[in-house]
Amino acid sequence: MPVNQLMKRPPDKHGILILAAGNASRFGSPKQLLFYQHKTFIRRIAEEATRALGNALVVVTGANAELIEPEIADLTFVRNEEWEEGMGTSISKGITEMMKLFPALEDVTILVCDQPHVSASLLLQMAAQKEATGKGMIACAYNNTIGTPSLFDKHYFNALCTLNGQQGAKVLLQKFPEDVAVVDFPSGAIDIDTREDYERLIQSV
Image (cartoon, rainbow, N blue to C red; front, side, top):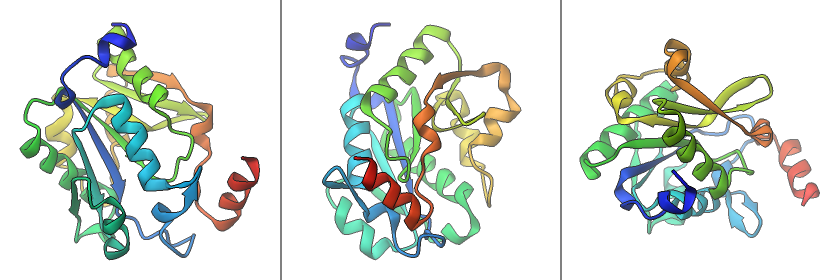
């Protein structure tokens, strides 16, 4: 299906789950609030995602929630009090909330805040790849691996809700490789883990 037709579909068909619960222990302060292109990381990725996929969005907060939530006060967010147990708890909580709020969802795209080169065009490309291939999972390929952003058909929602601890959604990509299509995203290898990473990003602009 052409991208322009995808954009005409009802906005509650494509879900957006942004994971923002980590404590950024290596960085030393909330990465979600770092600025890039005149916007915080979390604001920028939320705007790119909603521009591409609509407004069925949930942000999962956790560590530093009191600092991060004012930045997204106009968005739907849910706090994961168990964030220290790992990413699996945030995915589970976020998908559970999305299923309640947006029962007509056909798929959900999971994003993290520290991949600064994620764009609306990439997310539209992923949605188009799902339509073209009929695959239930679409993952981004970079640095000899696949990972976020990643899109999951509603068929996988229950499995996502059962994730816990350090289990991320990648376990489903590995468990059902025959149902995965990929989109090349070389810039996905650039994520911001340290202050040195951030300095390189700012200097590259």
